[in-house]
Image (cartoon, rainbow, N blue to C red; front, side, top):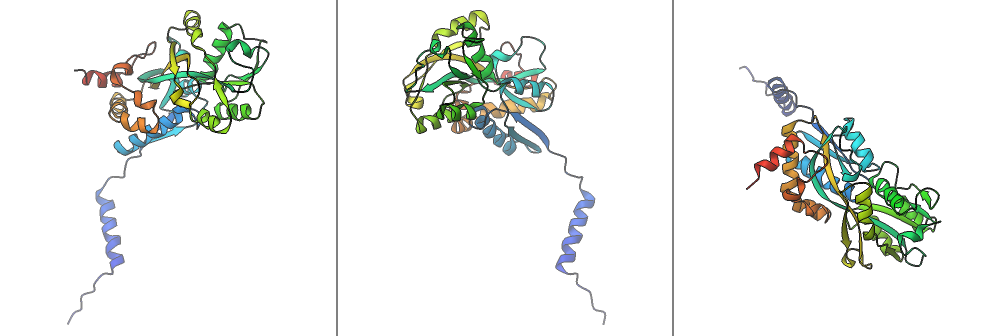
Length: 307
């Protein structure tokens, strides 16, 4: 009598795997989407992380990741050079011609914060004269807007002692008394400012009166917006606001940008849970990206949902 040899369980597994390998193609490499954001305690980074999670969940074979940067100006450069695929930027740093990026959406407005100690001498912009103020990190949108504001207020040059610190370093320097004030442009509430409110008495300086001078000298993108007391528990102020956009390289595939735009709009409630500023997205304002044109993929999406 001939005995049949029964293969072991391990041998069966190997055989199945070899068979599968023989009849299937190798899995394609995932499409990488790096998203240039800003400081870890800024709105861009929180928004970018939440958006990356949605993209990774909803688009097979795509891997998105939010990257820490110095924000707007660096982000536009990185996207334009093809070193990252998406980025957030303030509208005022965009030239009208000559850049290599296109808009996915106007996402929300950045509000310029001028943060000072509550017991300090700075109560209005003119009080910065002769004092030390951080205008934001080099390459950031904050630095662009803050330096323009100092210029129109005749506080540029030697009128103030300028420090170029990022958001987190600025907050730390103010708490240690190393600077008298710092600027930051972001959608409220800004986490670093919330943390300062919990750590020490601070206040925000009124800046709304400077919107029109900025518009006249530099750009019509500037508008006035309020920061109510409900945001930080501080006295309400009016300040300078600047729209900001999510941008992509002009050569990014149209179908991919269409899908990225769709996810941005369809999951805006989920993005709003991550940060209230992200929840202000809507298709009507999203298309207002002057001076930057929409990417064809984004334009096709907005056209598809028109009533």
